[in-house]
Length: 376
Image (cartoon, rainbow, N blue to C red; front, side, top):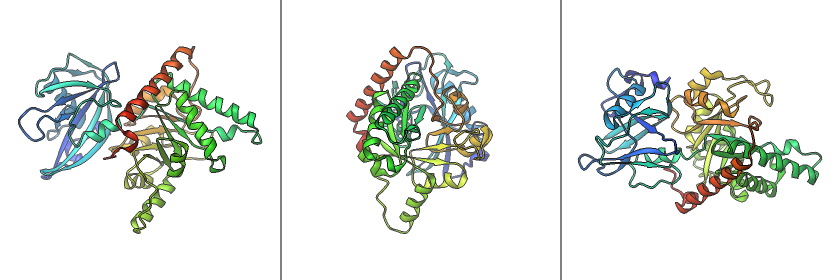
């Protein structure tokens, strides 16, 4: 796994520097950033704490050492998980950055090498300028930890309007259950025959239930017409887009909305990389009722497939919300599921809080111009 890799494995050369950085979280869902001092390149720019990986040292060991040296904190054993790996081209050379999420630590962070420290909610930003290699990482942290996937059409009975109302109620309830546990992105995955009007209704009900982001499975124009934040593509759709682009046909599907891609094997991983997806959904991790004949990856297979991914990865296939810690330990970002959300206690107050949180985050993103964002 990435956490145990040495510099020899991650291949540091004369033109590539290997760096390990920590995404340090506090209990208020904020991450720690430091402003560089007056000396050296990018003086005053904000960055995630970290530094170069020494020869023979694993990136995970390096980030623990760097946090001790730069901030004076000790990472709690077992409270650090591998996350994304990014490569950035600077004028002076290439930097390969291994990011780890740090959930618990001991001590009080001190600005030993930085000019200042700041706790920031990723969806709000709040500090500038960001180091170029770190800006897309902060954006990646805005992706929620739970993805709820719809199957409203499967519950319809002969297209009756009553059946559709019941399907909408089940969908909203499912999103609310997940939103009561954490932040949610809703994926509307329905057959094209359902129509844009009903897709728009599903998007609206997901937001009402507390989803902070909504994507539509299918063409980018469906997502636009349904008022969603982005689209989710199968690997086949993504491959078709990539092949047309390679032929010089200049396809316009990609747009400027968020984009996710489903990945089941190495070939599809390559496609997701080629189209520049903002997140991946990888699976099935375990056998599922919806795909009984599919070969499950298992946790080792999942970890191998998502290793050194440059974007957040959701695990799917026989999982529930409580599998989140295991997903993170394997290098994933979050859990994706259709039916894997259970009711746990009275959701009245928690559901209302989730809805308000979703509304607040969407307003913050609109204030920052996220719908018209520059992706990288």
